[in-house]
Length: 237
Image: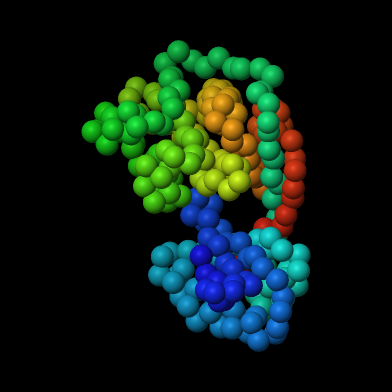
């Protein structure tokens, strides 16, 4: 997170580790503020991203008030764009879905985390990296969010993690290993995740870009309702 003024911030850049993207927030006050923002991005932020191996800078602008000013900063870049959709759900999906008996869906609770840390499951970083990139610790995650995973032969092969919590809204990060896809695992895992969210008074949020038709169709199949769309921008750095 970067803000232009610690005492009275008017512009902010927030990074989401889960998706590797940045969001610009704030309001326009003076041209000078945006010149300082431009200097910070070019002199510091881009250099830091290059060191970390980021090939491009991906961002969205959450405030219409500053969109044209942010795009003006990057007017010399070859910018690509894509629509991003946000869905939410406040009821259980109409249908559950059976999965092959060799798979098992488990909630990521303190007992599971201990077993994971004790080496009881293979591919532990498939879950741990996602969870700890979004939360400072497992304890913070457990107090504020939810996660499920799918086990196959003591190996974690699919995960669904709530990557943040704001006003009880939980955005979802989900992935299944390629060789285990098209078996209904993501849908079944999502049903469990949604049910747990509703029991805990959370609202799950599903985000996807327009080119990811599988993700878009999964959200619709689960019963998520579209509540917002925005534009994602990116360019090589």
